[in-house]
Structure formats: structure tokens, C-alpha cells
Length: 208
Image 1 (spheres, rainbow, N blue to C red):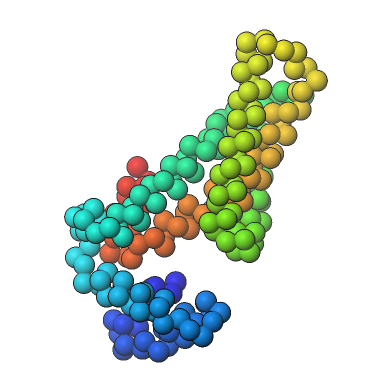
Image 2 (spheres, helix red, strand yellow; image 1 turned 90 degrees about the vertical axis):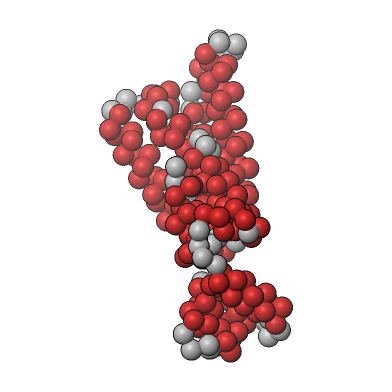
């Protein structure tokens, strides 16, 4: 937001002092000269760029932003959310339920939506980097646990009748940990990593 506002001020009436005050308000400190001039130089460079695919690869900052955008999108897609969504009915049946595919899918989607809405306050409070890291770590642990469970069950390595509740508990836990960061942060970051000239390139690559 600060970068976009600074860019608009520089392109219109050159209200650099107002942009500087915006940075001071966001940073909660008076001395923001280093951040201001660094952002100013970056904005001037971004404005001067042509906004082509060559700029995305040739310029280090754009290249790093592209790598970060692809990484966060891949982590979101391969974290296991699609697997849980596909096998929701199986997990409910393991716990003793008798839901239809439509019913289990509706419950899963509704729970994900509720926790994602609630997680917006958590992400804003903890910070995106912290919430994303812990969400990634905890989701991986849950996914590992349920993978071990189904591996043991498939090859009948142990009697798991007393642990029929575990897949459903893992599903609920995963929805919570996923919502803490993986569900929101990648989408937010894709809109903020680059300026509008290059944003379409990043979105097109990360959406493939």
C-alpha cells in the first residue's frame, strides 16, 4: 500500500512529504529516511521500466519477487488442502459418520471459509511472515501424521480401531493450521510483491 501511494504521489503532484508521513505512520517512528529513499529509488526504477517479460528475468528484485510468488503459490497448492477436500467423505466415515459426498463437501468448505475469515485478524496481529511459517510447519506435521495413519492402515501393520477418530481430528486441525497462513498469505503476497506493470506476469505464472 505504501509503495502504491508513493508511486501515485510521484506520478501526479510529487507530494513526497505526504508519502513520507504515510511511511512514518506505518512504521510508527519519526526517522524513516533510509526506508523512504530506498522506496523512492525503487519506485523511480519501477516507473522507468517497460514492464516486459525481460524485466522480470533481468532485474534481480523482480526475479526474486517472481521466485517468492511461485514458491508461496506452490506451497499453497501442494500443502495437502486438495487431498483433504477430496477424501472428506472417507474421513467422516472413518469417524463413524454416514454423510453423503455433497454433505461432507459442504461441511468442509463451510469450515474452511469460517476459519479463513477468523484468521484474517490473527494474520494481521502476528504478521504475515510469522503466520505463514507456522502455518506451513504445523500443516506439514498434520499431513505427515495422517499419512502415517493411512499407511499403517493400508498395510495392516497395527490395529487402529481405537484411533478411528484420528483422521477427523487431523482434518479439523489441518483446517485450522491451514487458515492461519497458507490460506491467506500467498494470495495477499501475490498482489503486493510487484508493481502493477509486472503484477500480471507474476499472476499469470503463479496461476498456471
